[in-house]
Length: 403
Image (cartoon, rainbow, N blue to C red; front, side, top):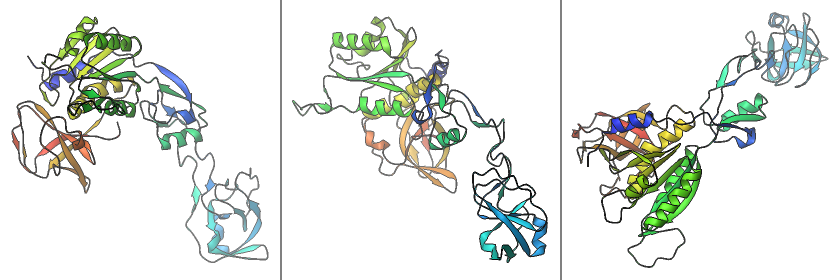
């Protein structure tokens, strides 16, 4: 089988045309985890007027030399203070209150003593102390949140402050997930013999795709039966933007998926990439839907899904990238196991702002060891030309977080 290079396969994936203009409006409270479809721009300054950041007395800074100022009254938060301070006067002003006209400084309560309607200044403060300037948080016209941002708690808080009742978000691509193989046993099903394997791929990938912003159609497991696989795939393609299957793409007698996909009228864009794990990956397209047939081993299918399915989901959501790749330094020697582009599970450690990679407790074996992705793990990339990498060598690492 002729294998594409990893770089070529990624370039071909990047050139695929997808509809990334589908949007919908949702309530702010329902927008958590969704992808923003427009820039959020401040329509006014915040604060719109000088504001007290502590409880104290609003006054003219020049009047601190007087040592004693007359209290005109209180200025509670939320009141539309209209009084104008004259020389020798102050107004008791509370956190969040509009600073009175004529004042330029807030003297904290603990810095004064109060006697007979006057404050006695015990400790002066700098000019403009404890006063929030106009536009301190943001200024009118400033882009606060960019299109393509995944909405989290901070984004919701900022949008609430802007009175964004409804939020325009990208329509979530629908991804159908199914695992194939007569040896696969779904969750909760009774085992008939010890040779059966408990299903994990469809649950792992469903969680991965949902974390990336997709809507997942969980199709469960299928036996190695051509008719049932064909019918399930056909039904899925009627409603899903992306169909992802695991198993059935290798060269075994019961690997039916690789033959079924073209018979569904899908164009096979490529099958076989020079990567480890996952070299038998198949990518196909039928009309506006895409098919990713992934290997059956748990680690392999997960890695290939990150490399190939997540970028397409990101593209459909209008996002610039599907995952973060950083440069890290090897904390130990590494011996490459093949002549392919390898994606090796590793531990990622940050020390003094620099990334380091080690392989402590990472098991070496088949591409079925999903436990290698637990804890603070990443995928270290070593190219086809790499052989033995010595300690201190810089490598690229895919971080397995914040998809």
